[in-house]
Amino acid sequence: MKTRFGRLNPFWRNLGILALVALLVVFLNQEGAVGVAGALVRLAFFVAIAVVAYFFWRDFGRREIATWPGRAQGVFYAAIGLLVVDLGVWFTRSPSGRDALAFIVVAAASGYAAVRTWLDQQRLG
View 1: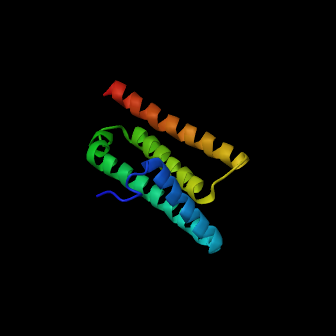
View 2 (view 1 turned 120 degrees about the vertical axis):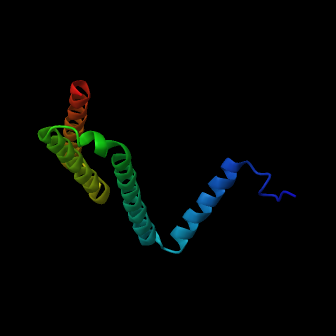
View 3 (view 1 turned 90 degrees about the vertical axis):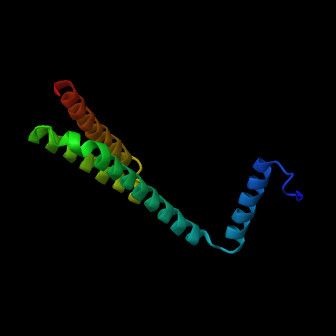
C-alpha cells in the first residue's frame, strides 16, 4: 500500500526533502555546521580518490613501472606526487584568481610529465 508521498514523483519528493533540510538549517542557525560538514565531505572525497589511485597502482602499475629506467621512474613518481600535493591544496584551500591559475598550470604540467613518461616507456618497451 503506497502512502501519499509514495505516489509523488521522486523528483518533487526529493526536492521537498531538500527544501525542508534547507529551512531547518536556516531556522536553527546551523550554517557553521553545514560548512564543517562540507569540509569533511571534501576531505573524504580526496581520501577516496587517493585510495582508489593507490589500489590501481598496487594492482597494475607497480610491476610495470619497476621495469622502467631509474630516471623515468623518478620523473613519473615526482609528477604524480606533485599532482597529489596540488590536488590537496585545491581541496583544502579552494583557491581563486592567481592561485587557481597556478593550480591549473601545475596540474597540467605534472599530468603532461606523467603521461609523456608513461607513453615513452610504452613505446620503448
